[in-house]
Length: 95
Image: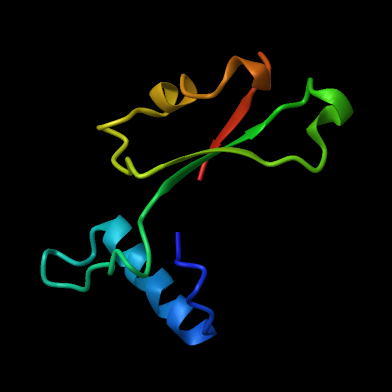
């Protein structure tokens, strides 16, 4: 997640590439780190909620977490964080 005050396309691309390297473990402790003022690595779980009014069309429902390690917080544990108001039918997409 990039700080919205950073608007330059090149800088945003560089931050995105650094985040990708960090997430994939390509830095091996010697590579670049994300500057917490510029960006945070996050895990996003998106949901389709087909039984909501309108079939959920036009809605984006997500759980956003700074817990990026699946071992530290399994997908189903994050799912438990979704309020019951979202509805019983969820199709999950771990992004």
